[in-house]
Image 1: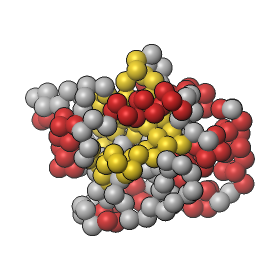
Image 2: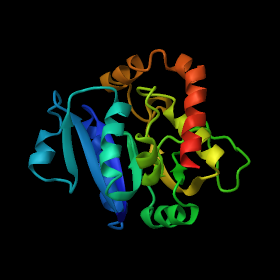
Image 3: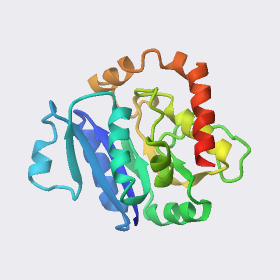
Length: 233
């Protein structure tokens, strides 16, 4: 296993946002992470930067489907190679240099079930009374790959695009394995914060989220969460 962070980023028709993400990684990396980009087969947006090797990333193609399903496909494969698996959306930027070392050190400290996230500058953070932890969503997790190997997924499979951030929080709380870095900024430039326009990709994500609030409040979800905690203990 490589003691590096494997950053997984599904993206679709967001070249401007993706370049902001990619440039921010180049500026802030210490060389302790790799980036794997998933692109739909019907999306030619990224062909030029791929063919010109603009960024030192791994690019993969797959048939379009809800992005959390794409994430799970990637995570299961790369969890066999890397100690730490991260999920970032394509409208995120690294704003703090040297983010990799503290995340890897904290993962080693917490152990095999660690779920770590950073300050995304969102407007909805609330205190949970846990030392070193804050926020009501784990939107961009850095997860010990043991979790993925044990469960067989990274994102809760009953969700397509939403609510798995709350699942990660609830899972980590029950395992006492969460940590939030308030001083490492990984900014989520979400349209709801007026940091980017609402686009066709956002519409696709929202359309694929239909029914997810009901699934989150279902007995199936509650049973699955209990099952997952027991598997990881």
